[in-house]
Length: 174
Image 1 (tube, rainbow, N blue to C red):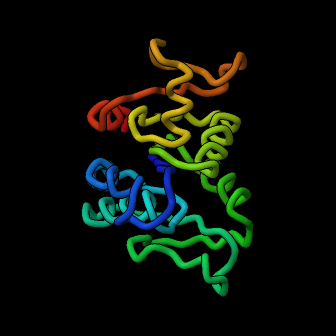
Image 2 (image 1 turned 30 degrees about the horizontal axis):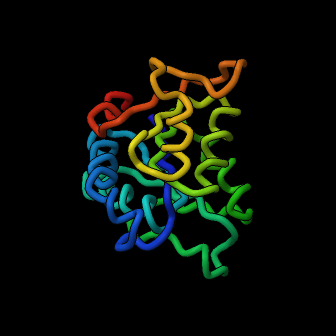
């Protein structure tokens, strides 16, 4: 299965990424151990931690990067095994990323993550939201508080969205 993990970018030693490190590493490790291919934005933050976990489990990791090789912000994490330089900006590369998913897992995240959640829904990709991870993932999850899984982001019911509160519940979707 092609698993896309989205979430906060930024320094892995700073908040809010640091608080999620243990769960995100384990998520990546389990993705790799189960033989799935991990896809992400290929850079820092949640992307780097989940890639490290998958790499240490012997997994395959694909990083979908913005811009091209010559641009400073296009530097991939050292744990990414296959890099795709899209030549696109951050928002447009997100569309390429989520379109390759069999499943999207969202952990925290800023406005870019929100864009990816809604793009995945538009592409009819099943989504798992880590409800306790902060950022836009948690904000969207709170919209459906008290609702049974799956939920849908609108009346079209394009793709199932699963709200999960623990890593053990998230990995059941793998």
